[in-house]
Length: 515
Image (cartoon, rainbow, N blue to C red; front, side, top):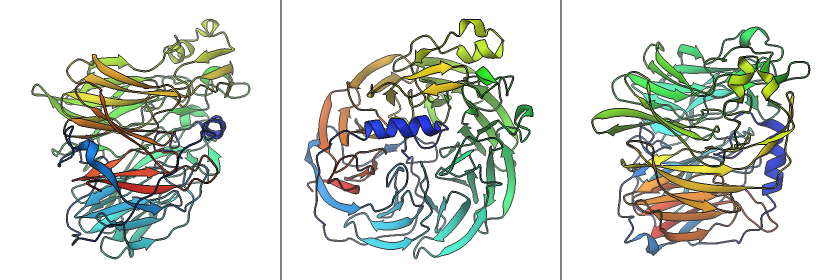
């Protein structure tokens, strides 16, 4: 599955879309190895750059140097799943890149040379987005059923614990870490089951040393709003944010079935707002006690998760939580109270943003299918955002689907476009946007100084001037890309995880200043 499209409950509709967009023809690339430098296994490594999920890197890559990036090395990706070989953002610490593919296998890779230091094989097909983190001498991650910890130096498994309750659930996220605890969630989705009845997304806090279960939080009730035979929902798809003061923030996935089920149109099998789906939740990380929640899309009909990793940022002395999801809105919440500060529409919309509220209120006469919706089940903001402290950089997918009836969504449109939109952190106003007419932005954005990087599904890596959106650099990857880049010092690591044309080879590609 794609980093941007990983899971998130769109099921067979998404499989059809993936087949359509994978027909894009891409150019191939290659690289060469460089000599190794000493490495260190000390320090924490997070896929979103830091515990606040800012995806903001420091180092010598800036607008005046980005044009000097050249291929330093490549590493083949051999995993196979329904959604390619790779869908995560590698994490870097001490000169080591920690990587997980879509068969759940984990590798430690020398950042300088691309040499593999160790491999832990699981060979358990995942849909993504998955990924690992490193902390306290261990590498933490998940397979589709279990959480695990590996020795950071050797890759030896130290513990594993099963978290799924049934064959309807899975795990599709890089975990979080804070104060000796690992945080990882189940979702009602796996390689063989797509939001079938009885799947509950549950967040678990585990002891980092032993894997012992400390507490759990059901993101949706196990009763599933009175109908567990049909309904499912919730769960986390990305790493929570941590404020360093004991609190954590996370986004929750959608309810299902969507838009409804046979004999139960417009979500009528799950009446009400379906808490805590499509919500941002703040809680005490030590105890699991909830402080507040903000639900963006009550009674979601169209798989519009608020799934992205929340970002924490100080704006004029006020701590904000920035979040986005597949409904195509970016929101800023007051971190203390959870109150909405601003809300901004991004990408294409065509008048269906309130359909869930209409259905929840019983006003279904205004819903007259068939009709097309923007964002579709793969539209809106699918992948993580980034920030330079002044702007938030939003990857957008513009792809519609057709709502055939109150019970069925169909994949009917070949349109696949994308954008990167820069919003002012203070008020959400649009500073600039760059459009990709034929390529969805399935990968996260990432910032280095005054440069923002983005990837598109046609396998291109772009670098833009953060203040203006002016394109500074562009490269073609050897395969399609469904993940954001990792930046470490003078190196940009770009996964190309989908072979979408004959002769393509999925690879991780490292670009370095001066090659």
